[in-house]
Image 1 (cartoon, rainbow over the protein chains, first blue to last red):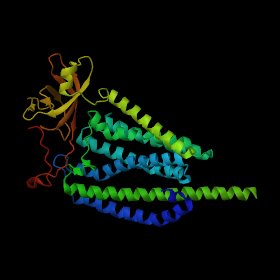
Image 2 (image 1 turned 90 degrees about the vertical axis):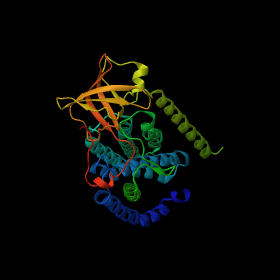
Image 3 (image 1 turned 180 degrees about the vertical axis):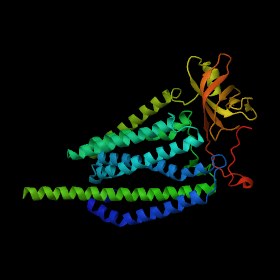
Image 4 (image 1 turned 180 degrees about the horizontal axis):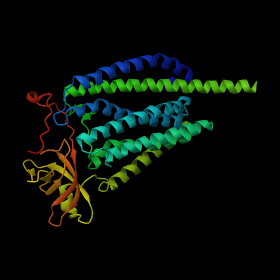
Amino acid sequence: MHAYANPARFLKIARALTPWLGWGGLLLIAIGVGYGLLVAPPERYQGDSVRIIYLHVPAAWLGMGGWTGIAVASFMQLVWRHPLAAVAGRALAVPGALFTAICLVSGSLWGRPAWGTYWEWDGRMTSMLVLLFLYFGYIALASAEKEKGGEGRLTAIFGLAGTVNLPIIHYSVVWWRSLHQTQSIDIVRGQSAIAGEMLWPLLVSAVGFSLFFGAIVMMRMRADLARTKVEARLRRMAEA
Amino acid sequence: MKPKSQRLILVSLAVIALGVAVLLAMSAMREQAAFFYAPADVQRLGLPLDRPVRVGGMVKEGSLRRHDDGVTIDFIVHDETEHTIPVTFTGIVPNLFREGSGVVAEGRFQPDGRFVASEILAKHDENYMPPELSDRGLHKTETIE
């Protein structure tokens, strides 16, 4: 991990990795979502509305995955003062917020026909909405701190503190009786309550969205580093 | 000790302390954060007559009955205990509402123990299965006969 904290080395790897992540991700999304929407069977009770799962579940995982990344970056920023950690945190926040929003909107659209409501304040939905607001707070704080020329230490503390919401989201359906169903896929035990014909396009779609998410993060980090370089050069020219 | 290791210990301790604090807070609000009362809770806490509440559980198999007016239904909500709640509802139920499936009803208890619902929400469980081969492609909503 430490070896990649060097911005120059990181840029070389990121530049080579971006197209693979981006196009590979899009290809897998096309396969997973395409199969899910057109070929996979409808669900016995939900009918065709189940197909929203191929977007909703990957979006939920990435919304939480994005903040997991922020947690790691914040920790590295606070402990080791890695020059890239703050850049990574800022790059993760916007796509993380986007996927969290996609998760909330798609879930709401599914909730109307299935549950009979667009929105209820149950544990899962409320904690996911809190995650979206945490992203907004993080983005605002990060850009404010960057503008002032800070290292991003406050942002990192906020990122680390906000991480407590992740276990709350995960266990919200276990701790509290909720409207949202409990988890269907147990990655640790390798068990799933989803029929195979629906499970594999879901997993392909999730991997695809994850790669695509990675491509967005790489591009945002490269843009961020390039902007810093431009600003430094402009300052030097102004001084000369 | 190097400042780096000092920070490592300090930040780790802070994270652990925060995590424990939140876990304690969450377990303390176990009751308050629940979305609905199960039949066993109603038995334990008494009927909350003074305010609208949500009750939830499974719609008991064979308990669903439609009144003559065509829009009012009666059914029994049960949970893993032997306690049950009789529910009456007038209106349109969601797609996933059916016998043997999860339900959340919003409304008020009557003094006789019957729950009059103003809104019915259906719950889906964690199982995602295709329809039986015989009716594949034809989504049948088995709700009220």
